[in-house]
Length: 368
Image (cartoon, rainbow, N blue to C red; front, side):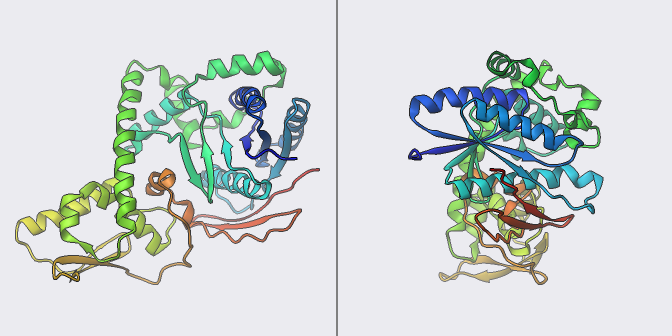
């Protein structure tokens, strides 16, 4: 008989995920929860299937139900897009398993080093203020709630817990983490694995906490705007430029169904220009940004407003609920832009995912 709450754990076999598994099992037993270890085999490395089987056996011996989810990746994926494709595949497979097993959340083992390293990479790559909010503790993808419960813990702490619980020989150190052809691997090759040890890292993380609070506030305002009917009033653009920029980035992505939205900085610059034109008494006609056409009009009260339409025929629309937890993610890559056609069966759920750069079919092979 299942408990009233069930939690999935993305288990790779690395030190962080094994440490999370050990902590989660202790917590689940105390709170009468069911745990499911979800092991994604991307099949990107020779021997990954054997590793996945070993991780599954380890989880079962530990008293946790476990499943292996394998990705049948297409051969046409370019090298530079392989990791991004694998990331979307991983989340889609985990989300499918959560829906199929009735899990109300999935936990992933990102640590504070991952947070600091990601902040450095975003800063060095010019992601802007929005990206410096760092990882969210909670976020939603494919209609599934994901959480990072050990984001405040260090890799060393989790590795110590994993070794004490499972032994050092059980830990899998994935060489892909050092692959210089990947985004993260290239930064590690340039700056070393210890980016988070930089003297400014503490200040950067503290700044990130403040930015994250600001970002959450902007998200709430932007989501409130998304519930209002168009057109968008000029007074709203003038009074809420941050919320309008976030809203415009996401709305443009939804209209065009492109893989990459506008981005907060680009949208904010555009919103500011619209406001400056009004203040200067400049009268402009239609404006375009990122495939979206903004046409000046009047709202029901006769006030100046803007109507948004797609410049060209949009791609096939994808219906999806709005979640504050994944609103920020849409400013980088929007999971709603992925065309997901689920064909569920009891044994083999299938997803077809299409983006600008790759198309793939995901088949979750669930071993008994």
